Length: 151
Image (cartoon, one colour):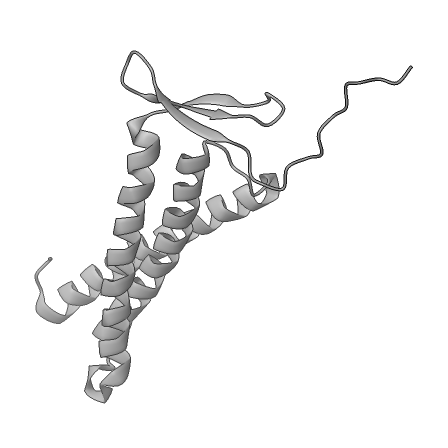
């Protein structure tokens, strides 16, 4: 006797994703991947990536404009503006590391890049944050030295 039940071939399409409101007004993200993951998606999981994306875009545009102005004009190349250039580069690195990976983490509710890369990103985020802070300290000390007044 032949078995009449046959399994269907695997679908090349991504798993089906449904957003269904629950009683609290949040949405449930239901992924049908062998029933392995069912999690809640709140408004924060959707809004946070949008907010981070807007902040990254605005920060990149502003800092790239600072870099362009300082590098394109020869008379802008002095110690004060080189410190601001350093701050803009550190801010861009911080935005790219924090904004992009945090957006992915919030949206997927998981860290898909592995444990080693998690450590590298965390380390780089702290380093760029410290570079920004110490650059601001040097700017303040430099300004006090030049003018005799604090910011």
